[in-house]
Length: 505
Image (tube, rainbow, N blue to C red):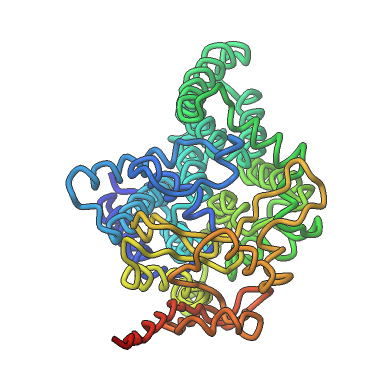
């Protein structure tokens, strides 16, 4: 079967896979802590028996599904003796890139094999930046894209996919357990499916929805309950802590319009223009764009729901990307059929260059230091070493990149679950680094290695006087807060041996 003129399935799949694997090696920067601390660090502790779990894993708001997949990889490496740090870092990313490639191919099929759709998904800067990262949102986005490709839309343009296919329900349940943030999308699509189904609504609920929810949900509850050692439903715990108790606000708050004015424009980049064009077209003629209207409603509910949550991040709208790019290609394709060749080249070139700039900068330059420091620490450390990270919480990976069973110390920023207004450790440290250091030395020996941002220079001079600067690594051209331009690595200066005094005989 040829999905698009001149492009066969194997050719398309090969190109997609090449681009996704390429992103693994081109994207060499740190983005957010969850890429490591919610997946790799958890899997490392599962398999190798040492590591650190964040407060989320103590409270039970995360599912062990994704870490268990990574743990499977680590187990193979462990028992084959191939558990080199480079393998522990790269193989999970390659696995995620393959899953993202499968999502891209599904997206391509969903559009009926349109070349513009393939072009948009492969050149999207934010997807290139995140598609090979071990983020929960990356896997969530892949599941959303694959589910949409088999969703029973009722529209003549989608032909083959009008058939009732329950596969999307399995994927929806898994995605909600992985990240409950995708729930608004499935609420809209589920209601639509009930009102447009070819079978009776009650029959669909009883014979399809309920059994799949019980089987898939029950299996994931069993998995999480096994690892946590108690009966637990992680989506409920996630909702209870982050929404009912508003714990997420502890990590920052933004105005209600942030996703509209900053989040989505940044994630879409230059693709914002065709997306706005598509929204305008759908708003003018909603009855002629039934699928577009449905997808826009799902996006609107998702954005509205999370606009009322004070804590916001760019990655939280990542699952909307395949939907918005579908809308974009749906207006570009009809236009391209009548456009002149120079117009096609101009638009394609603008989209390519508009995405290449941010993809390369954020993938190679911005926030690279906290990853580049890890192999340097491995080289400087030995089995007796200890490392202290005097940085904002989780600024670097840890044991998943060190793969050394040594003593480490980092500043904690666990939310004060039982005490409102309490100061967390990282805040206390940056308020008075000298006092924190004196209290630390009262409890333990000074570390062999110190890792910090250059923002601390001048505030820890008396401490650093006992250390030698080993490395100064560029990190960002846009320092903010306690994150500096460079990452510094210091090593404890060896005290000179005391001179021996010969006693008179």
